[in-house]
Amino acid sequence: MPSSVNSPTPCFDPLPSPYFLFFSVLEPLLTFAGAAYAIFTPLPYYIALYPPSLLAPPTAKSTHVAAIMVVRQLGSCFFLFALMGCVLLPAMRRTLKDRPAELETLVQAYLTCLAAADLTHIGFTLFDLGLTGSLAPSGWNALVWGNVGVTSVLFLVRTLWMAEVGRGSARQSGAERKSE
Image (cartoon, rainbow, N blue to C red):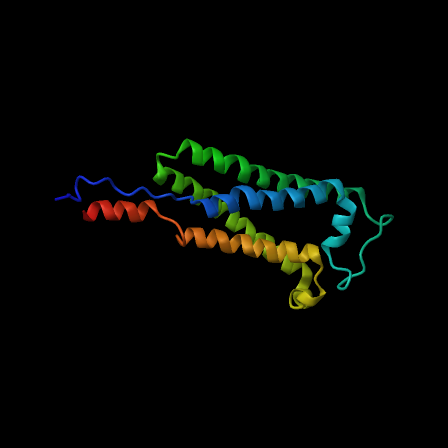
């Protein structure tokens, strides 16, 4: 008769393939694209930040060099986020593959920071669009949709991970071991 005491505890993966692929491949690709756009075409990026339908965009002659510098620095931040996703997460997963509870703790800390940044990014974008612009998505351009829409999807997937949708958890496994 098999004993539940002697049977191995089922292993769980706090970073199953769908989440791993989303956070370490898809999200970095999107972020690299944003970084490349900001770094290599800062003036068009800067001009597109505020939809022309809501305000007349600045021209190349009226744009200050500091604005281009700010956009390039923003691109550098995007680049950093992309690198973190495609370098840190695989390194954590590889290094902690036999310690899922520690991996889960680190992934949760990482995703919590990104989720907070998502909310501030969305919030500041909508704030700067003003009430009229925020409530008129028909006037948004692709860059605003990316800043609000894509970032909202990233936040939603992070929230699903934190809610343990579609993945195991060290808390669940620990509770199951205690009840056996």
